[in-house]
Length: 439
Image 1 (cartoon, rainbow, N blue to C red):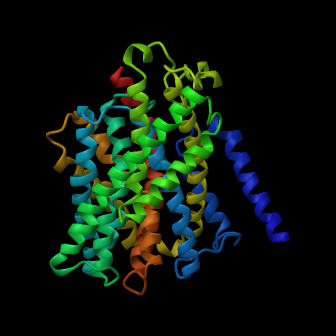
Image 2 (cartoon, helix red, strand yellow):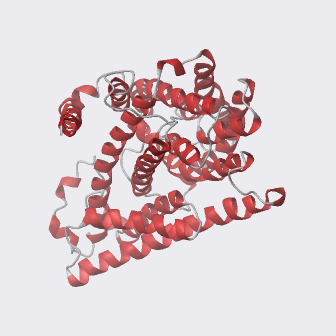
Image 3 (tube, helix red, strand yellow):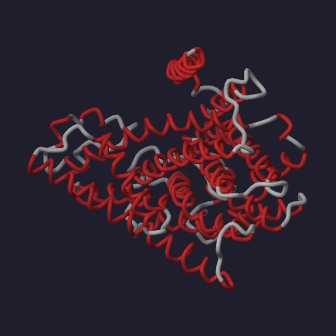
């Protein structure tokens, strides 16, 4: 009973503290994620011992896997909803390249860092795969300001974070195969056919189809039957679960399916809300000063039903995203140990932030429509966070353990922590200067 009371007091106190100090915190040179990280460490074994977590215990690894899995799903769906540009828009070229080619180069460079640090080839590849996805959620200033934001840098970083959390999966499966924990097939044919081609294509197709059908059905019910009113939270969670479950059932990547479902919902809103109407109607995004004009009655007005639904769903997912960020960063803080900050692990973390990410971006983006300042910022803001923690927990929960994997676990935790601190501290001032120059 005493332990349950302590849990409620700690959780409630942290949530209230974050809510009351949010405006004040925005003026400080560190992100909310950094606060959660420190709080988690203070609550962990090296602090008051309230949270006792370790990847050495299978139950703890499974718990971290499930919690980070939910956090990634929420953030990917929210990212999909934020991106309103048509798929044919040239804005998509940069994030597609960075979520595929840039990410593959990053995997190779980080794996090389691990190999130079003394890791064998398979654990080094696992290190590169786990640290390859970026996470713009942990540095919110680099995301698009609203769904009509066409700034190339913000759109690129937001969309890249949405896509590479799914496109990193084939590299993780390849690393697990090299560790003897996944079947790759003769010459890697099974990996190419199932883990790369089928899983990626099927995940995107399933997510898009379910998101489109779901959105059309809800809008029709509201317009024609005045049903499904005020149930955005249930509908959102239901769509995320259905898209993810259907993709997993088809042996496809559920992360890509959920991201595509968010894109499809925004596509339906864009198709239903014509440009001439959209110019007069409130933009369907949190953070837009016009959003307050949308009221419940708009849910049944033909010209506004899709926009109202997209806005309500996005508002709900953004709130969930903040809560998921808090939970995951507290877990990471509790898992961190001071002994993990060895010269080798710190060197790997700095190498990922200062060498691998910038070099990968500069090598793969010279022909994209990003100017030099935008490329510099894109090279710097490769935030590692929730996605990396999920893949690490996934690998451990699926048998990646032992002396050869333990250095990977410590290196990933240190890299995520240093990325949160470094990128979180520089995001606000760097993006403020970027906006001033653009004006």
